[in-house]
Amino acid sequence: MDIIGHEHTRKLLGRIASGMLPHHAFLFSGPEGVGKSLVAREFAASLLGCPNGDPSLKQDFLLVVPHVRKNAKKGKNAKKGIFVEDVREVGLFLSRFPAESKRRVVLIDDADRMNENAQNALLKTLEEPNTTSILILIVSRPGALRDTVVSRMFRVPFSLIPESVMSANMGVSIPEGKTPIAQFFYTLGRPGIIAGAVTDPEKFIERQDLLRPLFKLSALSFSERIAHAEKLSVSPMETADLFEWWTSGLRKRQPLDASVRETVLLYRRLEEIEKTTRLLRDTNANARLLIDRLFLVAF
Image (cartoon, rainbow, N blue to C red; front, top):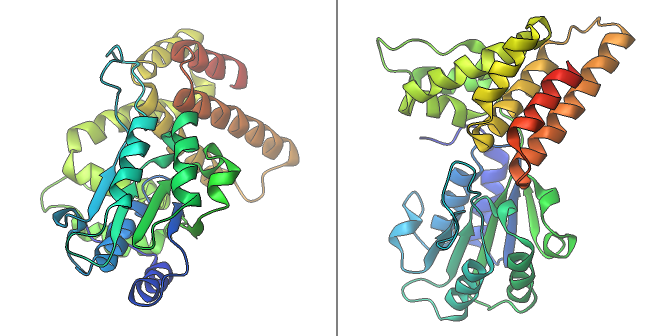
């Protein structure tokens, strides 16, 4: 997938990669699905001397992603994370001299899933950087990181992509003969959603079927709400993603001439949805109870 948007940010990172690095640690933060990981890989490739290439082909590149601990009980509610052992591996990797490039680069994706011990371990690497090491963290929820971690990093913010740019660049991605993707998904400003719809259309259709009832939740009966909550509780992390799409859609559907009462009601509901989303992502709370409460109390 090509990178959509972020021209200014990419130019800035290109200048940084080709000159003297002002920082050894970078924090890429912004909404899910806007292209942070793609830009980070592009930046890493430039740092390693392979612009327009794949940094994973270099010995001096390490990618860290969330995973389920080997000794954890596996099941539908198993939480992926980044743990202290992973961060210790990062420190060891960066302590070595580059093998084939001028630098060593570590990219930690979904770094907001680092637990407390992992963040403590990362602080040592941030406080005592190797002159040849570069660390890139990608987060969608920077608030999940400790202030002491964030304060030691150069922040690179990412925002949603304008609908016009999405339509102009992503519309051509739909293979001929395939069902067009509803314009609503272009308004969300997340190229990753469209890319996912193209690469895995069956899963995207399932997500659409789960998303659609959310926009008419107030009109659903008690039994219909409970039934839908049961479906959504099967995969809490995917439901958290759907709730982010839902909140974006609710904001965009609110009429500009809405009354004060309607606006206050909307924002109360948005607060409840976002609270539930955080709990689904960050805790082991009972997903079914969380979603039941949201559907029955906020709506």
